[in-house]
Length: 388
Image (cartoon, rainbow, N blue to C red; front, side, top):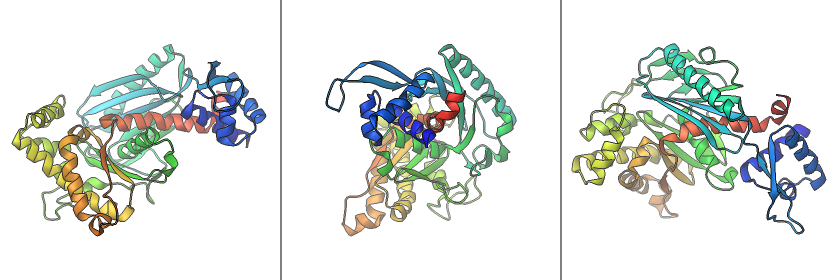
């Protein structure tokens, strides 16, 4: 029970600080005396910090304000993309303190070679974090593929060409507990944690649209993983069953029409690393008809695929993340039109169609979600942090 209550105090201050002891007690329903004892232990362990008195929601003299520590334990996030690698370090307050990005052609590459490069980036990030008095408390890695639930095994990542790849032995030791997760799932968690003030009531579909298209479903603040951890493969939902072949082996999948490479080619831009999405955005802003037609086609396909998910799951909202979020002014209208036409509640006229928005995190969602996931796991286990 003590460990549980330590975690409750730490989570509360990390999410809503600065708070006084009285504020924390009111939020979690414990007595001020009990909270004060728990806070003192977390202060001694360096997981909380104090600053001068501030305004309090309770009657009486303002109390000393508490904040999660910006030193000590930190979460490390990493992302393996088709054409890039990225690493970031996040402190317990949720602030990114270190970040590194590297363009890389990972499609068809040996996982060991890719992980060797990523390992070098991780070691460099940890060294930089140490100079800020931060130490790793866990690592989460975002990958564009199916991850076997509760393992570090990438069962299938078609856009990388990886099959049955266990990442655990290919990453540097000493970074704390390892989590490997689908990039769309981590993007959804980043959206949840940076979103409404009461995340446990939020239900939404998050689309992570890069070269591949993934999705994740959040129901009442919880990620819907599926029996094997594979929920959310929106990119391989057939939009036109007799359409062009897809890398998954099927035909007419959403990725064939709305994946980043597909949209670029339809707009007359050769896919490749660098400024390609910036070029497409610039053409749309200039009113280029071919570019606008390509983005409209992608939005229409995305709306068709999402309509089935919306009818089935009844979410409060749909969020578009990833690189295609940059095209929101031109992409979202056709998505919304298809949802209005095809979803049951809209067709019946009983309510407003589900709102569709672009994530403010854009393509950073999976990386931020990975780091935040590692931080959340650390906050769940303060006893381990105090022992360390």
